[in-house]
Amino acid sequence: RKLGNHKVKTKCPVCGDEITTRIRVRSYWVTWCTCCICCMVGLALCCYAFIPFCVNCTQRVQHFCPHCNNLIGTN
Ligand SMILES: [Zn+2]
Image (cartoon, rainbow, N blue to C red; front, side, top):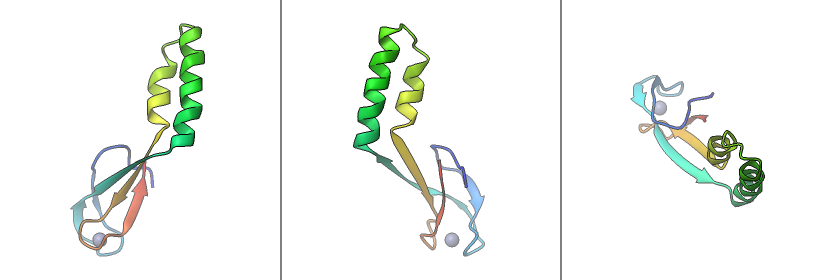
């Protein structure tokens, strides 16, 4: 499931409780490196639209249930 980068209120599919997800953010260095090059190309072209994209693509956010620790979804 796509849940975005922030905590969300949802129903846990495992324990059935209404919960606010616990999130864990991971950055991938290789992805970051690729995005860095992407950003530099973007800057060289004076195309600032690249920057928010580059910041976003380095992060992987996982949402967990605080009760049963089930992985509910990602960003
Ligand atoms: Zn749960």
